[in-house]
Every structure is written in structure tokens, then in C-alpha cells.
Length: 75
Image (cartoon, rainbow, N blue to C red):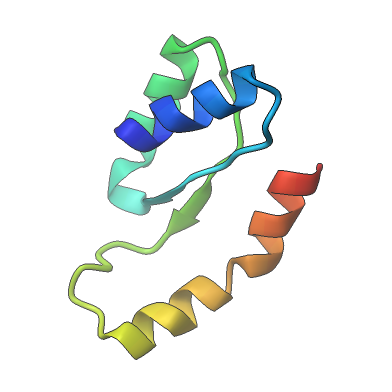
């Protein structure tokens, strides 16, 4: 999960960061944050799968998480 690595690198540089993952990858994301010394780092969990969604369906899904995204970046 490159997103975890990128998030950790941004945070180390003092840049607030979060990441999106789907439910199927939650355990992997949590494990990788822990292994990078950032146990409990927030992330945004989308339903799985999303690869089969149309562009409009994906827009509807992601709009549900905008407030959570902003909170994580401004906390």
C-alpha cells in the first residue's frame, strides 16, 4: 500500500495527510501504519468494492466522506 507510505512521509515532514482505502484493505493499512510507527493514524474507509462503480456512483460515495477528510487534515 503505497498510500500508507506516502501518508507517513507527508506526516514526518509536518504535512497533514490521510488516505482512502476500501474495507477489504483495512487490516493491511492498519498493519502498515503500525509497522511505520504510526499506530492509530486516521484513514478513510470506503465500502468495497469500488472498482465496479460508475463515475457518478463513485462521486456519490466519495462525497459522503468529504467532512471526514477535511476533519482529518485539519485536526
